[in-house]
Length: 91
Image 1 (cartoon, one colour):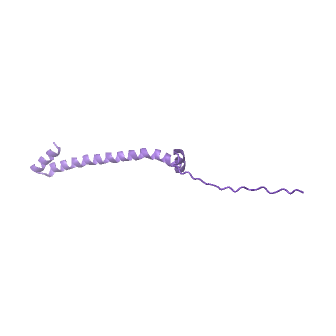
Image 2 (cartoon, rainbow, N blue to C red):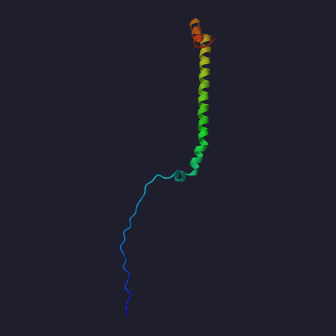
Image 3 (cartoon, one colour):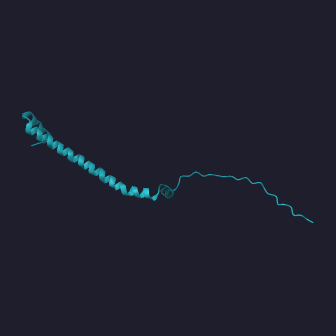
């Protein structure tokens, strides 16, 4: 009787190739999470508003301080201090 012969296996080599690319914008958003993107959109206007409020406070304090210096120079000073107050901007 004829016995079947086992099939010969061909030796193959596996070649693994890795392609390094930057992720697309969508994948980057997925990696960061939608929450962080939404938080940036929510908190950015709040930060701009806070900075604007701080700048307005500093400007207001500068005006009050200048008014106070002129008033004090007028009230306690002699002729030299009153002349200095007029040169700063007081009437």
